[in-house]
Image 1: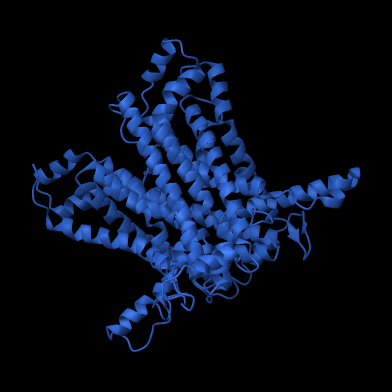
Image 2 (image 1 turned 60 degrees about the vertical axis):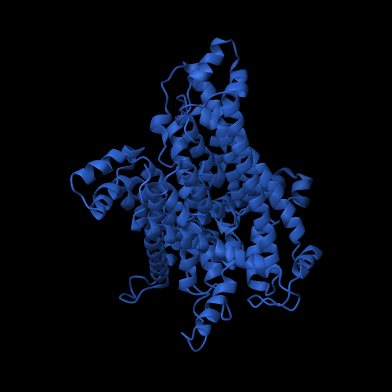
Length: 300
Length: 310
């Protein structure tokens, strides 16, 4: 029953194509420009083609240790990813029943999602500043040597930084879990329980395989949002910066295609993660269809 | 997965309570890690911010106190200098102006894209592919996506080269980069996806028979769009708008990078005060920003009863 496309289809398709070009065009431009020859500048024309700027990037970027920032961001991103997945799945399971503080948690998550990031970052910075002062005062009054001599701040990548990132990634995780469990057929679980499965067994062998693809989706949000996070990290990260923070600093100081090379590398990492996650999700979904029907389960 | 199901909120997730108090305890324990993180890194920091906004400070330290100094200073001279606008009012006005422009553009664009995906793309597989195409950039770095405009908009960038080549201009336009224009452009580039996804989510739920009924009743294409589809998309539109407006109001990164550190924004004011370690002053400005944002959200939600849509 195919009919011809109306004129509006072609107009809207053109708008869509232009939008996609608008989305990807600039990134493709810096991808091309990152292979600029050694004499090349920040804009076209290309002055030969080389991997000169990548080699320069690899050798280190002046005062800023980009390599160390890269690994720090990677580690933080992985930890944020794992915690976001674990906490979101657990909270998603919890929301299927009633528990004290349920609606408070829901509204807090929404508030955290739309709260201006600078406010969150400032709040965490203040909180840790007060904590630091309290610890120092405590050290002085009790004469604890290591606090008096060595303690500077409780802030750090895996303390305040991790917390800041989680306030940004967990709301996404929770909302995805809501969508998943809204479409979840609880009769599978009941069947498992009737067959004598413990709660852990029914989670591990029944629930997890069904929601697996979406959990990977939560992980995708967890890693990529952390990997690129700036606003919430800005005041709360402590002494060691993450990669995007270094990058933001470099935008004003670096005037060579080196920054494009760095951009290409960062984007490549993001894309690798995105494609791996999407591939994994497709794989899990296919396995699920092969091992059992998911009729009526919808897409998520 | 690509949809941020902001509307799938608790009403329907609250399944029939089946377990007794032990079930409630188990559920509470399952939710506890998330609660704890939000408590330590979101609720407590906000409370601290509100408290410290009433504190005093010197060059070296912050002093517990109860003073309105920070609020008074934030609005310093705002009433006496009227009708001229004080710095704070000017900053808010500039931020609101950018916000309004970004909102109007992302809403139009987001609605159009979503409409195309829902009503013109015929297979679900194609819908998913095209939707992913719009979402993938969201998972890549914002700063990179900002600096990728430099080779296009710079003085010797592609746009100027193209316009010069076509003979449309005699000399390069300077204001393409590091201007209000480039800031708005970058916001649209980065955050249209926040409009697309909620509107798409609303549109997918529209019962097609309603549209058929409208056609049968003799409605034209525009009438269907305006009287059937737009009202039914209201929840998505409001949610997308809240996202976009709150992002723009609190932003300092995009305005900083794309505005060449020249354009004022509320977020930047707070950031600058923080760099001078004027915590209480920054906290007061954060509280003011929060109040403005909440007022905007309340105004937006008046357009639609969110609780009814959840």
